[in-house]
Length: 84
Image (tube, rainbow, N blue to C red):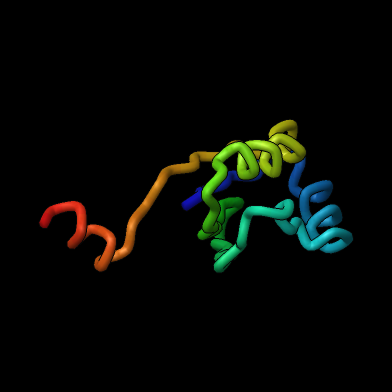
């Protein structure tokens, strides 16, 4: 799960680049969903990958305009396996 925050001074640049490119991840990273907080400059992306380097490469293209917090998450079924 990736939480992002757009820096206020980069808002227009980020929006233009998002509209132009779709901000899709590289091969090996599947974007399962993306949610935008319309009242702020924040949002969330749920991704799936076996190679976290792919996520790092993807986000690196945006780090001059945004900050990111990426954490590993598991669903209920996966967590049940962990605690069993």
